[in-house]
Image 1: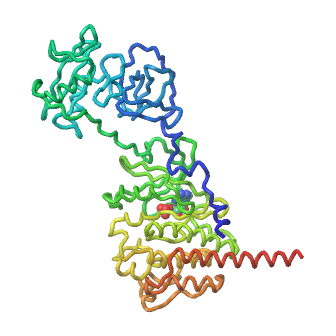
Image 2: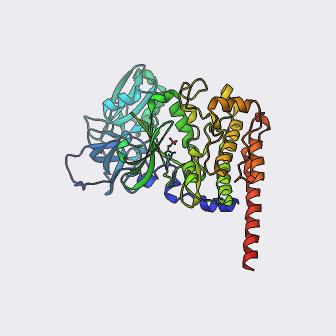
Image 3: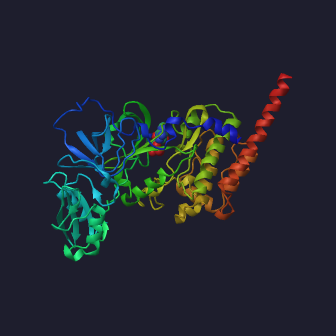
Length: 487
Ligand code: AMP
């Protein structure tokens, strides 16, 4: 069974990265700069940057760059020592005032090539630097010479380092050193001479991590509304006019904003062939877009209503959902809204779980037992409906209802009963009867899921094993029958 599910469920390459792959991250250059432009300003790379696509330019800290254009969060640059042009994140570079020659100092921790006096002050006064942090930079006013900048409490002092004709260096006339290392060793030891202690070289704050999942809203086009759920509308759309995606437009008003970022962070770490893959988010500004893979055949509930499917097909779909839920179980993630409407169908009857973890984000008054119509009472375990104790065991209950939906081709459970009546009946021990279209061994699995004592319900792992073995037995029986017919 597992192999059958796997072969159906293989994720297309373009979806497997978990975000829009590195090759597609940066914008496409749409212009042809003249590398000889005299006016393009000179920048220095503050950090190493490894290009993630052919549109980007790899730079090392200290590299001098000509910057031709600023494009959003990027600059279009060329290394002075190279010919290729590409994008570099704008926060990785700083403008410098003039060109300076490069030399062996570039490899030392205290030499900051090409930065201005002003930039030196900014760096030294920002954390993690503190009293005694220092750096050597190129002198702005005297080409070929240097300056020593030292943080002294909340101020920065600057000392000119002059060069003798023989190349030796000095701060005070008559006190020259053959190398910068020796000059610094002397003033580290004798800091009182300059009244500024040299404690440790200036450190650069690590650049803010770029969130690969965050994309500009302008990259997405909405094409067709697919549906509407608890969280807002869902649209079919295109990313950069090429990649088909599903876009969930979150109704911010119904969300617990403080939990949103954390939950999205969780979703980014989940990856399984039976879970809808998150591709990207637009969370700056409103409304928030959650971009996922597009499932062409829509939700399982509507699909079941429309299609004539064999018992083996139904069982296969149930196994796929159990497979995805086993993964969530391993990760200790409670779905809270497992139902056929939250399973999406793709080509070849591939089923994937959607909206995992999101139900927790809905504001309590929307997703609560008290007076709200939005709680899916007929799918909810009694302890969750009555006391809001959601757990993987309450998800197991919902899975039993999902099995009921699958084996009745999308019938509403407890038809004819109100939510209130359903809760009352369930609490008294009533359970849905076996549908005529449901094999008895599957119905026994449903009853296991609906045990009143949550602890007595099976795990998803056990459910998956059980359903897989039923599937295998049925599939073998089917194969034997076919063989007999053709013998
Ligand atoms: P939801 O808010 O997740 O309940 O989505 C509402 C409806 O939009 C679902 O019942 C589906 O019919 C449709 N839908 C949601 N996500 C997708 C998707 N990734 N691909 C295709 N249709 C979707």
